[in-house]
Image (cartoon, rainbow, N blue to C red; front, side, top):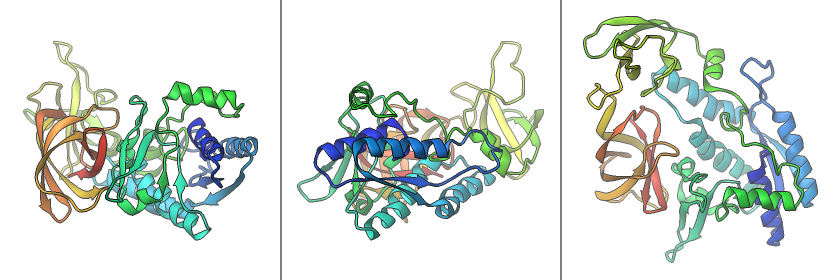
Length: 350
């Protein structure tokens, strides 16, 4: 229970179904010095505790701060330091929520971990666990589950996956839950209301370098550090538009000389659009990676699924061909793989 309305209703529904359920808050980050924005962990714990009391279930705080720093924060900082754009939310799910927290739950007598994810879980005729997009397509969160394995999914439950958000809030209000009208968090996974730029500023040393126009190598200005920018970024680059009022966009990072590469947001901008991409660290939710086949991919959260040709290469890598060129596929981000609305797995952009 994160202290939000989604996990509150998840707990309520399980209780109503007659499950022997208990609430737990994962204490991952406390932002002791307040240097990187508001981190309302104490308020979230109290909100979760109040809801547990209203529902009539036990509640406890599980301290995972050391694991979170090692498995998520360090991954995040290492990735940005190498010019990548990591996804801490996906890694939090794989390594923490359905990783060390799942292990803790099983060791303490629980049979499964339930969350407030908008996703639907089913048992196939073969006995394997299948995951489908949530009923509320505007809130669907299967993208964030794309690197989970079958063992993790066997111990996962998603009680709110068949609900749309307005109905979920109605259930919370009718039950008088303290979190019924609490707004959704927009921060990093379980860090709180923290903007990524603020977090990086506090933890990654700035290393200024040139801003270079990719088409002709002309230096247009200086940047504060490559970790502040990601492929496709339009705002906050620090160079003015041209005479035709065309704005520059980030098209790449050149680590050799610490250069930020920019161009205009055109289909022919070097490096901005890709017709194929290689992914690594493949995770296949239903078992071994299959042979070459036509699938669909979600190139980033909230983007629609797009047709792809998936060609595995072995050693956990695959070549993905897009039916239409895709914009700003940043190395380190995740491609989620689907067959219709069924999540099949995912891989990380090389």
